[in-house]
Image (cartoon, rainbow, N blue to C red; front, top):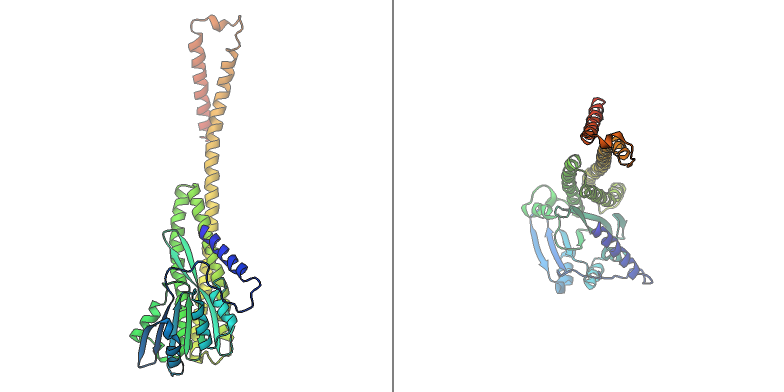
Length: 364
């Protein structure tokens, strides 16, 4: 829960910093990461592939060289704290300042925007931290232009390695298709990784189910609540993405090749499936919470039953002891030689008789 609160505070802090600034103003993160911004380029066609890291000072030269070639160029930027680089890329690729502002603001919900000569897509890349049992979300901005795809990530590490390997090894049809197919492949691998996250969440849910049935303690309750919060956060990331892909299928834009549209429909189906699994897991965790509360109530009832039985047994015993504790002078049993053992025997017989009666009635 703590990391989600800090994330919300980050979002609110970003909004607060932009109060009164002109639209399109780019602001770097308040606490930039330790890693420097990197730019990775892959340029390919059916026969050739070139891959390299681009130094920041040679961005303009390299992009001007690849921009007008009949190949597909993928530019992957990792890190958002170099505002000058983002502005330079926007100028070289004719990207609107408001789009650049959205790229540097990591509080965007998944959406699709149509520019003059590009499509801008925002989605969230999700990973599961098994150590803390939390879902980590990272904003990914994707710009599809004529012959190029530009991606922005917040930090190093992503789920795009399968796409890179398909490009390097010439696996499948990706090297024969245009930039819209590359954009689809990148979005599809992000969506496919949602299933990996859901698998980890379902494994954690199974562990909690076993713990609920074995012992219902506060640690189990906290685990259930934390996992439900993670599913709520995942739901916020996936639900708007369904609308993004629905709009992509309806969009009449020459940047999306007709051959790519069936694959977009397939990814849309995957998103719907992810949403259904998320809702099912939420219902499962709600049911486990009810089971936990039932276990807790059952345990409390057992404790109260034992205490009630103990109290019921001691009520007549206390009555007998109270009578002989009144200290009257004329009580025949006080001067009887066997008075004390007789009273103790009476109390023992009475207690055992009550236990036997409770057992016969099925109360214990």
